[in-house]
Length: 272
Image (cartoon, rainbow, N blue to C red; front, side, top):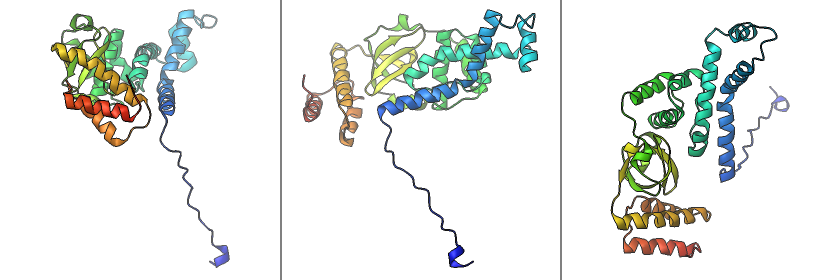
């Protein structure tokens, strides 16, 4: 091949868009949830068709309509409807805590035997066990059976908002919070939303070890407020992030640690 006939190959130019902003992170999660909800949209539509009997001009019953129009077996449309209800029940929880939604009807199926709050509790355990990844239906089924075999602890009988705890026995992505302090901020039927140094997570009562010391109970809410203000003030250097992680594990700040936190606040222009 002559030099003139050679084809010049250019490498694709990769544009550096930089790290995602907090707004873009929220948009990413919102759009991912829309993709995950796609299969459940069919179930929601089927529910509306059934409830409003919109098939009645051509068919005497819903099952025959679904068979003739969509090729569904008798049970399949009801499974899709049940799965859509599960996804709807989990949606707010997944948005709030950054979890994924089930991607298939078969993954939702074991959850349909539970009430809404139990579905949320089960899905929280699924996320812990899989490290936030999409599970199989068998994994979900095992967790549902485990939940059904042990007595349920109602969060409202266990604690009140504002109570302080040490986090224990967490698994999966939440394992990093074991040993950290937490403050109850939201009570559901069987789960508790707790504020930690870098956000909010959903846990079970069995993951909470109460802290009874009066001085700690007084100091921790103020410590959380101070850490949150620093995190919200803008870009922090890696040393500051490391120190905030450290403070997030200290049940009680010593005088020196309190002075160090005050110094960091002053460096970032934060005043009481």
